[in-house]
Image 1 (cartoon, rainbow, N blue to C red):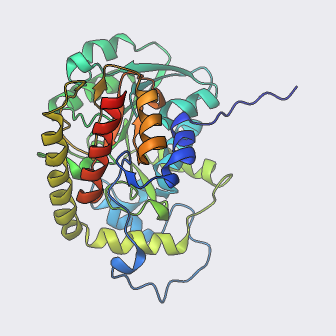
Image 2: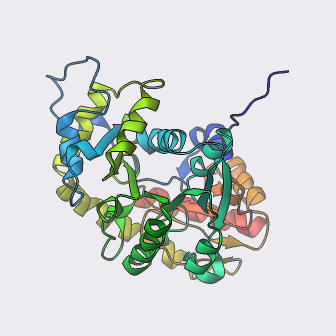
Length: 362
């Protein structure tokens, strides 16, 4: 009998089944996608050849500029953050190593170590703690064979953000115990107050990953990156990708390069839209008797708690009202569901109206 190590991701199954069959999407975890014609890009001279295995050097230099103390050789451009996560876990850890993964989170963070047969434990963020990680609880989970701790802040789906003090404390702990921290900084540029310093700049024991998919509204180009002061991390990633994707799309790298070259200008409008949309959600929540929510501090998602089954609610919402959200079982937290506010304001308002109707009927 052939055994299957890799399993479908519940979140992706939910997306496959419902996202393309709705009128209102208020469950997505990124800024509303752009169309190519909206971006004012010059792509006429892009050479459609194989690209360099770690990414276009010019693109790597632009990304390295965001990280103090890093050069372009400390950066690898990957097929989204997903390839970064897979490649890091596959190259850095083995079956004897123990991993700690924050939950809720992007589900690849726990599916990948399970698929690779690593020893993995989930570190749950608690509603009663305002989805703030507790340092005492996290350090209490560390074992002699712990090799990697995985965190995401601003968090998807809760929107929680750790403090710089907390980040520096956990870095001191991992340096002392020779553990690596994998920090997903996908939403760092959409922090509602001052963003955290890029974590990879703070220690050679920290690995930062990010992506163009969520903040920049171009998930279709599938461009992400890994940054680390430890160049052996980059070389380990290279060994994995040479046996999988080999290199990135030349066209997609060209799009990412031009967008990141005007990053600051783009982010002004994007952050304004996201904050305006969150105000719509905030006002809507004031009238919800069956929901309670910890206000997000960054990103484009929030994670309300419902008094009934969120799978039942989200399925009813999509099947009767053609409105998309994500039930909490996709994140191992059944009592919650994800609302995304990175899209168009009118779509968000209409989707919340449909959600009102579904909640009343449930």
